[in-house]
Length: 494
Image 1 (cartoon, rainbow, N blue to C red):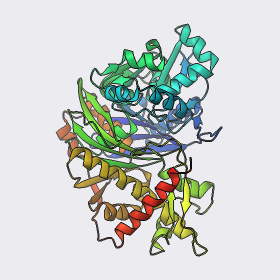
Image 2 (image 1 turned 135 degrees about the vertical axis):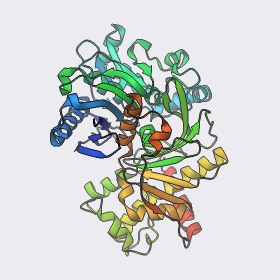
Image 3 (image 1 turned 120 degrees about the vertical axis):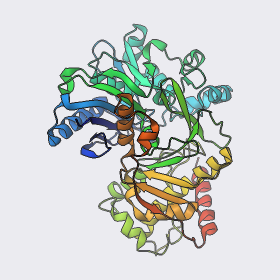
């Protein structure tokens, strides 16, 4: 009998539901896009109910299109945008204000105050993270300080804080389960990598009541169940992971030293570091990749805040292209970027710079610059940012990367893939299933519910679609010098 796995993929700008069978074949997919709001410079918010309602609509649509009843689904896996924080009423389930999105920089000054107090070294040792507005803890504290209803409910013991996985599980279970997996917990600045649980000292530093937080669970296993009223049947929720960890799992990077890069709204490069945490000295993060049967696998991560979002900006704000797909042909239509560089520091810079105050710029424009040069510069900017991450990763581990597995929406852009391979000097491998976040959620759920018995069995499900071999790149050093000069200019704007 066919065993079907339903994967939820709740992202920054879209929700998606995908249905897979036990042979990892895609049975159906449905996605819905939505918009975030930007109420002040550097602020990013999204309606909490939009996250849930679009995700629910996708699940219902994919089941209906495939002619599948909810009772036929063997298990459900969930992956989600990380660090985004919500607050809701534990009694009514109603959200208190909008969710604060991972990209939001409103708490940058709060992070600087904590840094000035000398707390960052101890915070980093406990969490593996830097003290940055990217992560969840200062967002939670901001809600407590600026939304009176959040503080009132916290004092009354009636508040739930959660990342997006917690919010979706709460809704799926009709309020019966308030939990998060270890990979999502490790992105909050409140989770201790050594103990595998919320850290009392960190809770005190950030002023977050422990009673508001979800229970930390494994990433695979029967973790909760959907309420029959939601989808029409009681389904085991058997896999949960933050989107980038889910993509690492979906790319079957199970051996230490294997790495993947997801080209989505941002770019997220993760390297499996095995059972041992790597302490970066080059601005990268130590994080939980996944926790299975109580055993933690760690990853080294570099995060680029703006990648696909740059192409969206060219399309929606500058109206230089009608679709993201147009950038591939435009970029290939010119021999180079004509000296144009774009630094997409719209919300500051992530790894390895961690500069909250840097701002985006376009430099090198001449009267001969065309929209093709700008399109090419945008794609090259994504690849340059990833090169910076990989150079730091190799310096931290002392191990040269031999292959980079890629996924995400921008991985369909052949120009970007080839330019990335040329720039890195290593092969870039694109799988048949480039929706690796949802695929990883399905694999975690299948492992957790007994569809597959081992990681070795799952590893055989990964299938290569195209491999981009590096070619000799003319003027590579000149291009890199131009990028680094542009980067320095972006950081001098504050």
